[in-house]
Image (cartoon, rainbow, N blue to C red; front, side, top):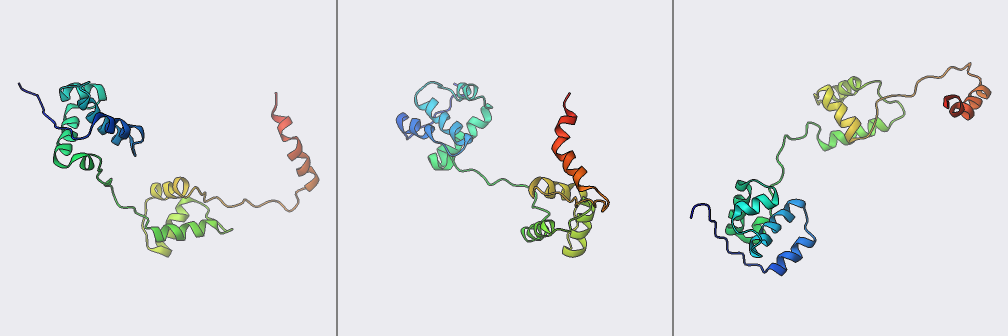
Length: 169
């Protein structure tokens, strides 16, 4: 019969049930769930298991092949996420963080970008610098704006006390 995939599951259904209780990741839980469904015969063909798990049939077949080749250990191993290497190395991130903590900050993200290029030799796009500073380092390039020396302190204190009342309707 076409589409029938025989898989010998070595673990007992109670072992698999125990593994389902505390998986390391959601993906691990789905993979163990596949074995549990097949072992307890709640899903006999892989197509039915795929429908129950909400995964594509090819994904389920890949998981079954992984289990057949290396058992539970191979099924639960994950490839490290690949991706582009970071444009800002850890040492540069640390120097930027230290520079952002200084009282004299940066005027803009463009100024940060220029500082990275001139002091650290790192060419980075404006968007990249913004992402690193704002989202990753949780910092802001803004500096404290100058205050007038003629400012009346008593008037400022009165405003601070009453500013909420002025905005209420």
